[in-house]
Image (cartoon, rainbow, N blue to C red; front, side, top):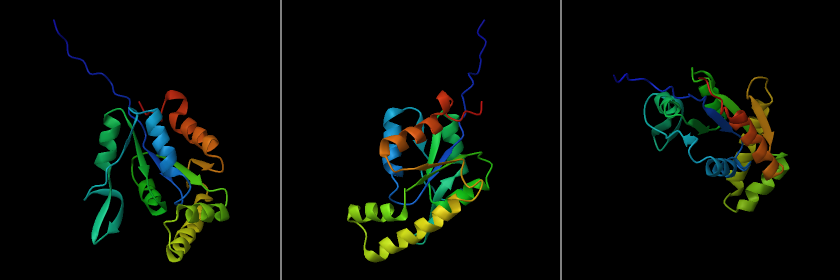
Length: 175
């Protein structure tokens, strides 16, 4: 006789990674996704029912609770690469996310990195550095993040981020 059974899918807590532009978030995440191609997914921005959002061109775009939960249901870790206000919004949800902040070694080094890109005007650079100062101050608050990694050496920072997210193979599992 055939008896159907359900295989329990491990559910993983989402990981919120934030930090000023120029700290290496995209580069670290690209390497993480390459090392673990079947373990992580980005939450795709959608319209409606957001846990975090921003306005662009008169429309609101953001991350929906359902999109994050759907990724977890598939046995993957949802990665949210969002800015400080988004972090505050996610903290108000029931997603039980893990929060990582990637910091530059200094504002001076961050400015050097941003200038090195060659994509910033003086005005946009000034705005990015002011925002970075705000994010660094927020990161100092107790409970703002579960982990802070300073990216002054890429390989060391990557290993620290990787080890924290991978969590000895548990990947922040809840089941």
